[in-house]
Image (tube, rainbow, N blue to C red; front, side):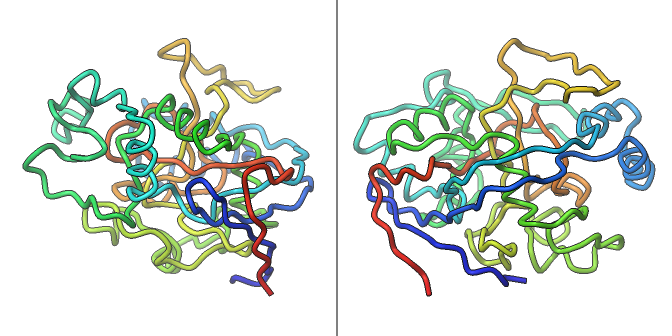
Length: 288
């Protein structure tokens, strides 16, 4: 699957490896017919139908060349950021994070839950240096990006990079019966109810790891309807932003290249950074 060797660089600030994503056009999103079929096959509550239709209609987008982190931001990198800046996440300041209460299917406040303690003080949730940092809000992610001199990817950049030249449900193919998803992603079927060390699954064709599963990833765009969509999104807040990629506790349908999230919280959510291809603050490390 890893069949295009893209130029890479190592960023000086957080030592992340970044992949050069070439400029190009692609078809973003999905059709109403495809989303209706996906929704029907997934046997998900009818109240969540809008979550699927938010990815419609399919439309052409052009993306300029840019760099994207090869892996999600890890606990190691976020620890360095906090050590150098004294930054406290929104969950740390408020004194609580969020957890998904399975019996009631609702988000509940969770005292003491934050990026250092993703399941609370006594919770058995991985916090090792090479796991993706989670319990990250959009503002937390933006502040980290500013510290590095990078930024969050746009939603179009994220989907374009995830697809890596494909136009299928997943970057590895249609996979209608989810026969191959376990080779590329951590999801509810193999993650053992927790995040996993980044980079263990096969990358996409451009060498990006964990684009699907493990942890949802923030992008810079607000969660609004696509131009020409017949389905108008009703935001729950003025500053509601898009999340992409799915996570360790989610059904495979949420890991599709076109799927758009926005309301996920807590230890399901992390991020990765992007950077314009002007190379400020970075050192090129070409890969042969």
